[in-house]
Amino acid sequence: MTRLKNSDICDISFNLCRYNRELISKTGQSLLGIACHACGVEELKIKQKLDSFCVHVVPVTTGLGVISNFSETVCAILKFLGFIALVSDKPDASGITSAFENKADAIMMADDKRFVGINLNTKSVVDNSEMTGQVFASAMDLMADGINQKDVLVIGCGSVGEAAARKLLSFNAKLSLIDINYNTAQLLAKKLSRAEQKDKIIVLKQEDNILSYKYILEATPSENTITDSLLSELTVVASPGVPLGVSAKGCKILNDHLIHDKLELGVAAMAVALLK
Ligand code: PYL
Image 1: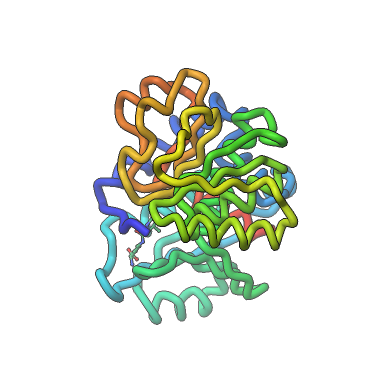
Image 2 (image 1 turned 90 degrees about the vertical axis):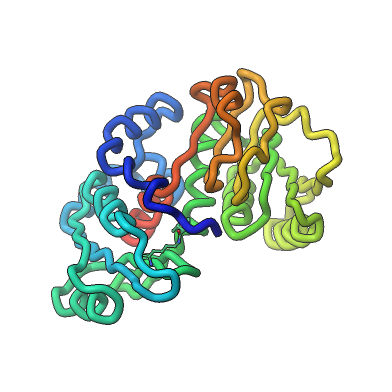
């Protein structure tokens, strides 16, 4: 998992309205709408509950420490969606304790290994990697007007790619998996075939011809994983990978067929999953 830098996220808070309009134009759904699609819940039902649901975002100082603006950005996304949210003025155990003492409904916090949300009433836990994979797969389903029976190339078979692949299978997509480590892709294919009783999963090698995919979900921590030669103005890319795996020229080719962000969709899906 790539550790975010302040420069990755410092523009998010004041671009949320613009980004929301971009999502509506590309998928037909807002940030909240895509998150609800990922969680399989009606947006209206969530809207009726979220304005009385209080989330404390707790900074965590362990390991490599706090990322400047990380908690503030998570909080801004939650407030944009309509949740009650604040950044705890105390980090770590003090911040968690304060959330309980102030009867918060949930906390969100991240160390160097995991970014989680915890519902303090139901004790349910949501994980950023899991929800990010699910919500980008859901955005692809919306951009494709239904990914059912369509071929999707999933690049990157780690925790985000696995969650995206599972979600795409739930939409009845046909998957081709590729990873820099062939065994990783093979293991995921075996796991998914067993779990989802699907025989439609192909595992590709780096050298295989992968020119013919219209739908690509990129979930790697590397740049330029999707070379420009793979792209046309018809290609649809959903890329939760940080940094973006598409070149500047590739972004121009894709135009409005590319969904990528570094926190927004994942945080929105975590929040809806906590509430549902
Ligand atoms: C959650 C992000 C998504 C991609 N990489 C993950 C990352 O950067 N994790 C580290 C988050 C550290 C947060 C720090 C703080 O400010 O509380 N402990």
